[in-house]
Figure 1: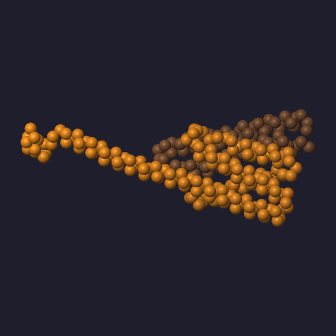
Figure 2 (figure 1 turned 120 degrees about the vertical axis):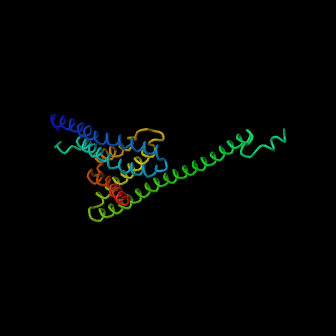
Amino acid sequence: MDSITTAASVVAAGLAVGLGAIGPGIGQGSAAQGAVEGIARQPEAEGKIRGTLLLSFAFMESLTIYGLVVALVLLFANPFAG
Amino acid sequence: MLASTLLQPENDPPEGGDVLLEMHKETRSGASSDLSDNSSIQATQTSVDEYVQLQLRIYRTALLVSVFAVLLTGVFCGLHFSISLLVGAISGLLYLRLLARSVGRLGETTKSVGKAQLVVPVLLVLAASKLPQLDLIPSLLGFLLYKPSLILQLLLES
């Protein structure tokens, strides 16, 4: 792998993780805030709130995972290394 | 003095009566607040059980989908692909378990959701890139096999 490809891969990996984590990070933060407030107001609805939070977190975090996978593939199994 | 207290009219009770009445009222309100506390604790416990049941339903569905997919790929795509899919599916279940634990702890011991579950896909991709027995694409597809169960639960709840 020549040096330009290596440098581009490393920069792309950083961008994939960094930019890909911004949106889900903000979303997870606001979701967690809302859930904690909801549990504090209505403790009897804790299970439902936590269940909804689990499902929404699983969907939100998959976006981060996609970025992470792209970054790891670029770093450890680069298809342009040939 | 005894006679004077006995002759006192009913609508003008002695001062001790007020104290007794207040104490009685306090006891009654204390008992009712105890009852409401107990019912709210019971409601919270039922709700927490609901969350545990939801988790179990998701795990069960994800396990069924994974077994079905592994068997299907074992028949049609070969053993190598099937083993990679199985490893990915197991790591997907592990990821989901860690995520559920993080969500369960939220608000009780921590104020933010933990990131320990993100170690699982990292280790999976590293293992798939280093080990010759594992392929990257089937492992990632296997990891995403928990998604159908989540979508199913969302559809069932709505």
